[in-house]
Length: 312
Image (cartoon, rainbow, N blue to C red; front, top):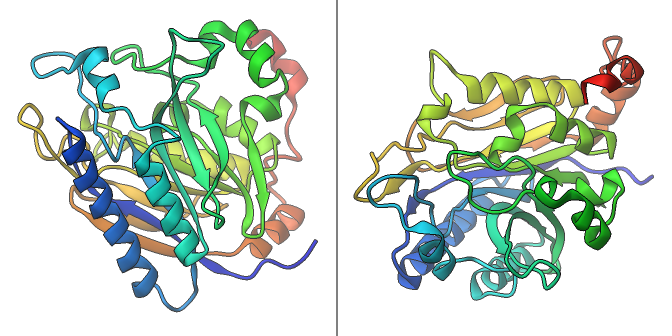
């Protein structure tokens, strides 16, 4: 196994306009691309090799109540893997030779014509999508998209039944990358599956609202994700919206809080406020691997799964 040099992992916390048309989507995209340009130049000490963006960062999302777009309105502004937005992100990844991860892509497949999946992605330096993951935990209060669990038997027939198919991890020249989306991080199972599959850097796009406990004193967003990083001994890069522009939302509806957490659960960087920001921190995969091999309190060595089978 060749040595992986240290690099900068970057998290973007953008202002998001809830899109009424494709023009709003284009403006969201242009803003994110400009912030990538800024960060790549600003964090010059070590090259930026990974960028993490939020969930629904291009089109936004509405919640139940006045102003809700509904499923038909949402689908009219869907971001798809074969659309111009993903091509533009691919061009940016190719320009700088880095990986870009984000979430909120709508994926429909022929086998399930009446369903769509909330897909997270990783784009490689080639400009191509190298990893797709379908959000497992769909919040019942919004209900956008289909969880693989909703039609598990049929889903396994199409996408594969192995844990590596359901929770994919890709081995790259900057480490083993995986992704989970927003609500997936509220419980331990998805991150544990990714860790089981070897994940070293967990990309975590979110559109996490204040009602879900982003800020103190609840601080649910922070302490749960620090726990996910600690338990799986991996880096975790979490990206949330900074502010939002929508007539029916407060500006701080999703109030930032983006962070970079290391493999011990320590916070390296934290944009703990509702505003646009770009944060970066050193990702040291060799140090992570040494820690996993030397750590006395090793959360993988101490796994005792057999006693808990009945829970599930």
